[in-house]
Image (cartoon, rainbow, N blue to C red; front, side):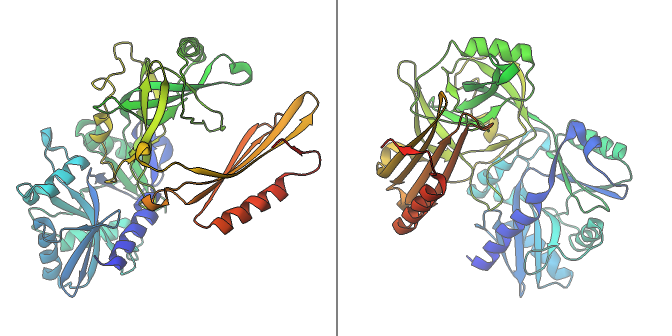
Length: 460
């Protein structure tokens, strides 16, 4: 593997497609701008960057991993480049395959095809960008210029063709293309370029059925109402995979009704999750199923690192226990749709395949917490300060994880909890990590000095 090519590909994913503005297709007219517009069809595949140097090609995916350069589609693309007189080129495109009904491609099918020699000849490559040696797009006043170059180079192929594109001069024309390609045609989405520097990725919302495993309560006039609900889907073996929280789309009447129902389902839990205010979710027995929708689900961050979800075991008597972390998704813009009274919390009704049919999870080994060494607390200090009838608390804990050998945990963690009743954000948390004992203890001592002033006294 060429580490330079790997780094360029990961950087390209982080700085170009990763920075497109995500837009809900139902609201595209409110979000996009421009009159000199080129719309391209978004394919549901895998980013592939092809490097040709001296006529020899290497290909890498968004995670910086090498793809087989001898795939028929890549060999065809290389022949096209050579026919155009090019022996030095960097081309970004989508590797995809259509195995489903109506020819609709799915990202999860790419892995199947790569693992099955009988399917490799069906993989296709759709170039959408020409890059310089550092992975940046070649200079162009408008994306149309790059797409035109690709159309001149990538011609007469059976497995290779530039992404489909269409001109538009108004938002209404883009809406018409969205209706034709996405709503009626089932495409994954659109990418919209114009004379403006912003690039829009337009996608439809996808509906998911999930079980509620926790909730937080609203504040002030919304006390006695649900604020957010913690959601999970179910693995075939019955484990729950936490995927999102949702609070948008709920009326006050429904918030109150859900609060009444969920408050009767309180459950014990060794696991703690917090909402955006750092307020802990009250865990509940997984009985209520809801439908929510999302405009996008991503499986890795901008740096190409996999998104991980918590795996939970549930027992009606003992409650929830975190059993590990596994490859998963981050859900963008979740919106509540309805309570599914016709669904139950079982692998068939809240199945994880609702997600894996839409996106391909990163290939990482699940971390089983039961197989890992236990952490060791190095130091724990708690300070109090009284203010009238209210008490403020600061807690500092440093521990050694003993899990650094996994590559997924730091060696040392410093956690600071700061509770102040009089602040608007009553509970603050600060987490710092290090692989050096000396460094983590230096951070700990400095944090004590900067946080503990006059009036505080140490409890222990």
